[in-house]
Amino acid sequence: MSLDQQGTFTPMPGAAPFHRMVAAQAAMEARLMLRNGEQLLLAVVIPVIVLIGGVEGAHRMGKTFAHPAVDVFTPGVLALAVMSTAFTSLAIMTGFERRYGVIKRLGSSPLPRAGLLAGKVGALLLVEVLQLVVISIVALALGWDPDVDPLGAVLAFLLGTAAFASLGLLVAGVLRAEATLAAANLVYLLLLAGGAVVLPPSSYGAFGSVVQWLPSGALGDAMRQAFIDGRTSWLDLAVLLVWAVAGTFMTSRTFTWE
Amino acid sequence: MSKPVPTEPAVAVDGLVMRYGDKVAVDGLSLTVDRQTITAVLGPNGAGKTTTLETCEGYRAPQQGTVRVLGLDPVRDRSDLLPRIGVMLQGGGAWSGVRAMEMLRHVARLHAHPLDTEALAERLGLGDCGRTPYRRLSGGQQQRLGLAMAVVGRPEIVFVDEPTAGMDPQARRATWELLEELRHDGVTVVLTTHYMDEAERLADRIHIIDHGRLIASGTPLELTRGGSDTRTATIRLVVTRPFPSGTPDSLRSTLGSETEVTQLDELSLVLSGPADASTLAKISGWCDANGVLPESLSLGQRNLEDVFLELTGRELTP
Image (cartoon, rainbow over all chains, first blue to last red; front, top):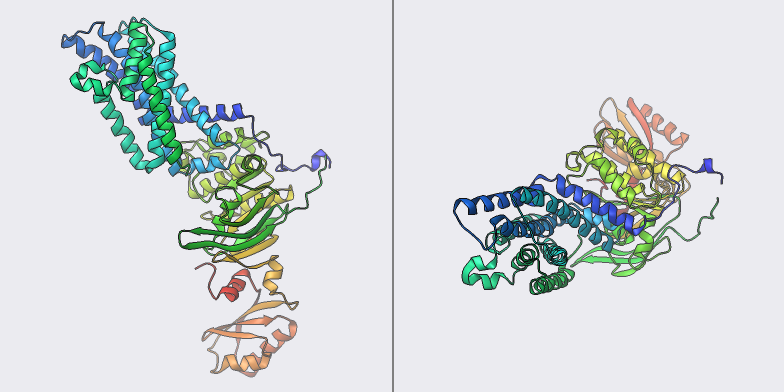
């Protein structure tokens, strides 16, 4: 058969290389997350407002911490940013992907389930890097002077993402899309107010000894130790790891792609 | 470079049974699809068409029986099979905020040798809505995007589920032409439809299913001929003044027992039977003898709608 007999549609099937499929999926999901107004509000606007509001509020009310307010608040706000993306945004997006048949559609494409999951993780990390950059710029403008432990910071980011992402997928896999939307936002608000993310567990009095075992409290503390004291907080990282393992286990038992 | 076409069928379904709770959706279905053909699975809503297709696409494991696509088990050999098939779902399948071309390009990137997305979109009339978010596309545009996503990876076989449902006539024709070009270029097309004109126009072979069972199979011509060699036709007679009483019996005795006569109202009736010059001559003779003036006498091939009605006693499209 000569080449000019080949038609436009002459079969030439094949999957793209795995890393290219994952990169395409990650870029696509990150783009969609950042394009969505509510998701952007959660990812960037609310953390920045909490940071500026916290620092200004502490200043006006004359509340003092062992360190300058911006040094105390910024790591907590970074933890909040991780939580908003890895938990709330991921849960909402995945919930609607199931509802709109996106996951079903991709299920008949060459992208395997593992590739889809890897793409989602890639998208989360892309968005989180962007959040880190924006929040750091605002914090530095407010006079942030961190004493960074790079290992503790990176591990807090990764384990915090893993813990919250597994819980986000758990919610998205069990509930309908609308219920996921409501639950993911509600949990976010509850943890923002009472989960020791932005303020250390010690600010919660006796309740503090409970919230430090929540993923929110553990992530907040791991961030604070990594950015204020320049230490790796192995206990908090271990708590996050336990949540990640438990969340992954429960998700793998309950999640359905459709 | 010429590759021999493998002789095994593109799709082989054997004794497939699928139930949802108590409801039997597919009830011992067996059928094959030859390579490089367009095969239509025709049946009313709820006949089990989509379930059968989703079993071929690997979404569901057969509860009984076997399914092979390109010689592979769609569940066990999923990762080998998926790059080689294209799937058009009945609806949805895209993020609500994704732009039409962005979605098509994304699916293209998952494949090794995708088609040119711009040319494909142009071809399917999606050129104007490339930047429109999916949720704002019309139903027909969403369907065409779904078809584009199914073929962009240059698959060997495409499964299209009700491809033209909700399309305007122009989009329908464009879709049909695309499916015919796919076959011409060597792609196997399996489509489900409940439009008999779609099946009749496109399909090399039609499988009619009802209540999850195969009730008839054949080329459109074989099915409409009803297996006999005589050309069977539907003749519609409309007259200017009401028929005299006893017309059906009188016509039947004129034309012979092979002809069915159904009077629709006082001015029109339908005859079904062998269509030849002598039948037509007898009809005009009968009109003359009974003082009836024909307003129109039209002759039509027995169609799939009639076949389905005869096989099941029900209309295909309610």
